[in-house]
Amino acid sequence: MAEERALAPYEAHIYDVKVKKTFLEVTNEKTYLKEVIFAKQAFDASDSLQKCAPASIRNAIVNVALTGATLNPALQQAFLIPRKGKACLDFSYRGLTQIAVSSGGVLDIDADVVYDKDEFIYERGLSPVLTHRPFMGGDRGKKKYVYATAVLPSGIKKFIVLDAFEIDKVKKTSQAKSGPWVDWEDEMWRKTAVKKLYKLLPQTERMSTAVAVLNAHEGIEKPSKAAELEKRFDYNQEKTVEGEIEPEKKLCPTSNQWENCDECKEKSTCPEHK
Image 1 (cartoon, rainbow, N blue to C red):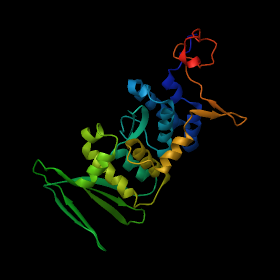
Image 2: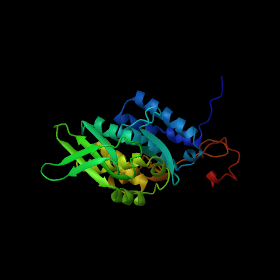
Image 3: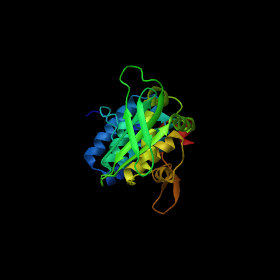
Image 4: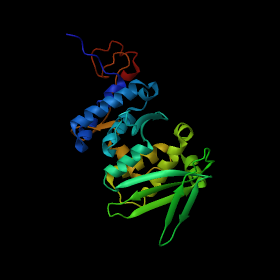
């Protein structure tokens, strides 16, 4: 019989039993098994993700369950990315709108960018107006506005419009000054508009969690919701049955076993055993 391969440190955190237990509290085992496979594929392909803080790895996977998003690369809804030594769950514009609709707060939600050459009419008041006719003759010029619209279950329509100045303020506040803001700027404009519009919509647990996670990882703010999630799923310390606190066990880099294992023959020099 082939000898069972020891888990790499990051794999141990992906398959953490408490992560699985928490995951199954909000979804089923079939979904859990699919998502951990997608998570492992993401970590296997990224050396930077593998080096991320253990608690952040577990938090990111749990947040997949709490938001109802999927890491399926074919659907491109959510992604695991390294950011300042932490594994972060990020959402595409498509993923964020899917969470909003599937959580039941809205029937439909959308956003679009307005360029200089587009025809755009925007009026506020008791009878608000929003008309956008994109320019179809080639180069549309610079991005000028972005708007998000939503249809509530009651049939009422809500919308919000942000100008380039407001978007630039968000971009400057965010820690993510490279990556999506450079490579996928239109999508980031749309995501920002959807997050702003959500404040005017019926609040749902999944969408609130997704917005809190995005804001926390982007460094825009530290919402109480995100802080609560980080505290709840931070396994750096575990409570014993007696109620005492003991440090989390670590994987020994020499033997790839837990630090209290008998197999490690390098305990005198291994930093994990000191």
